[in-house]
Length: 75
Image 1 (cartoon, rainbow, N blue to C red):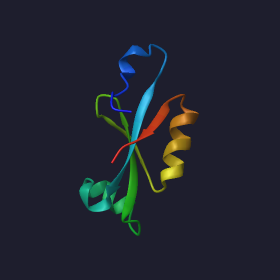
Image 2: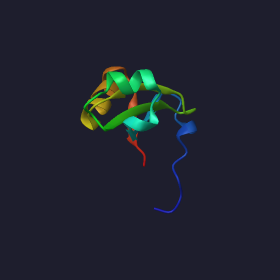
Image 3: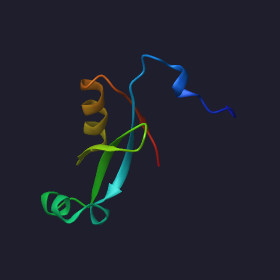
Image 4: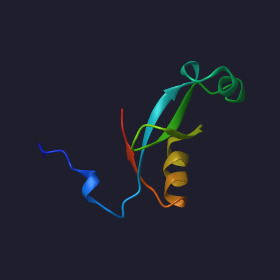
């Protein structure tokens, strides 16, 4: 598949992106809350706004689906 899918054509799709994030890259307050966990997962809206940060990749996908979003992994 060489052509990227254009998500903007899907009127009903509520899409979010899940990506890994290092604890050190988070604001200090969030780093304190995540003590003991170095790798976390962030859920971002299509425009890049961070909606949530969780400790587990699977949890990020479940959280998105429970809120009627279609999650996609990005690197």
